[in-house]
Image 1: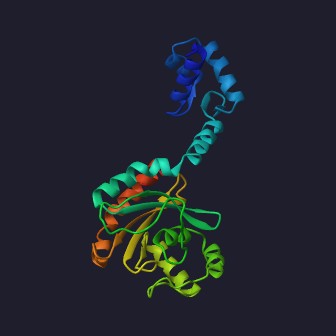
Image 2: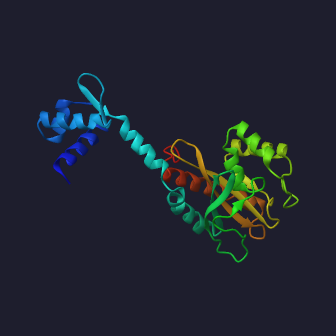
Image 3: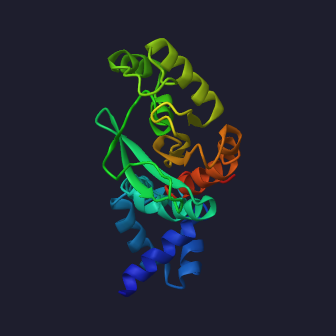
Length: 250
């Protein structure tokens, strides 16, 4: 590493603890003040450092912009993978990760059940908006007016006797999901499968994906499915933290 780059990084690290004077920075970097001033001027010109007042320097906006861009570009599938794999190993049931893309909910990752009876799905498959738990989580995270517009466009095909078939019923269900923090598919998409899902959040708290556990009813009844919710929510929090949501595990 070049000496100048190393010194500049030392300065940035020192400023991460708060504003510093030129004298303080020179002491921490172990170099003359003229060298520090030259480096600070270069960093200031690129907005990595800025003047706090006449004597103090602090970190500049460019660093925060870089951090935000880096977090925004993180692959949620890659970041969430360890948490989802752990949930799959813990429960033995099918675990999905889904995202909302271009008006559709799409499965972007899957961990297969270890049981012989399982649901059919695959990465890249679209999830029905009105009768899957992952879709309910993702749509419930939208602003109310956007939910209403989307609800009006759905063709409420009755997949089972439990499927929601009206926009009014769907919007009421989404309000419950938003309040409760997780969604249920009560055998609404397939008669023999039920599912529970929770949101994965990004750095600003926005919902960027949904993680779910899908279980054949012959393996777990409704109460058994609900008993998985605490593990699911912990997984969602861990995945959210991996995606930059700093409040996820607090």
